[in-house]
Image (cartoon, rainbow, N blue to C red; front, top):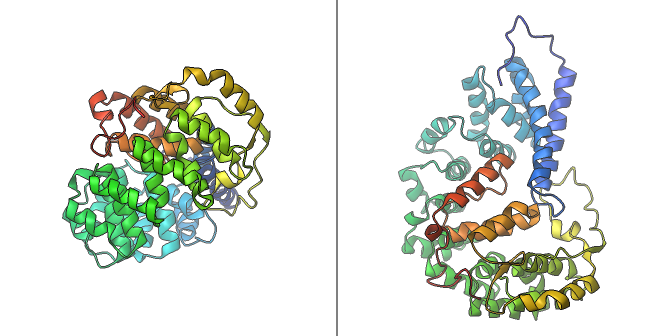
Length: 441
């Protein structure tokens, strides 16, 4: 949006502009919470997002004076979540004097200070598609410090802009944060991941590196990565939660057996229930119903039961308030927002409807699992549920689509549309050399 010509511009109210920045920062935090909330769907998030962007637009319309006096200094104010992100967005969305605004943001990024860099990275991810890759791509070859290089690789990978030879070189960088970022960048080009590089990443002493390598390997369809998932589950490795989610998506008797065994272990029960709904079988629905009788497991069990059967279990009590949401950066909705379910209603529903579910079929929201039913569940489900479903889509397409659950809603909708346009053969690729056929358990 272009600012007004200087001779038509009203006097600047610095107090009002400061208020716009404060409100934008607050709404950024609300938007981040909404992105994972079990009581929000995509349209709800779009409403929060529109209010956020209205305040950012006001900062953009104020032009270069506001950019210089208000937004550039705010890039250093990383102690208040959302403020750096919105200041950077206000600069990156400038039309007038865009070059100067982008330089201001990139100078802070190149300085490599952790707090501001994280906020700027989030803003850049949201502001992609404005020719910004022409600024960032040359910076990769200019030998930036490790923190800056890691950020650049993360952003370019999310934008699907090839970093060039620096990507392969970064996979063996001495800094663990750079190696991890390089593996995460490879999620956009999983075919470029060799087995030797993957094995090196999986055996890295840094958990950040090995976790990023495992995710890249899964998207590449590597059997080595799938065997690593089994090892993580059996040995209680640091990436057990990712491994459980992947095995749940893959399905198959062996994967289901591992997951069911997890419900018999109090230490692993919660981790298992987080992903159980992705298996989608009659056996998992019954296990979820049984787990609902344990109060500490009941909210997660009801969520998984609903994902399999399509029955949205009524609540008998709301989720617990999560405390100081304004100050929170990371949200744990399953610990606060998932309601306590009415178990008796779920049991009565299952007694009536169980006969229509076939033991040899996998289900999502009560329909046989397939490309259309999976994408429909993604479109209509809560934001909390959306994270797991999009991971299932990403695995099914071997990284053909972005991992966009943290993007603007318009980007998420565009990625859904792209998924629906994929040829069925591309979307329905098997997992782990044959596991995970659409219909079979």
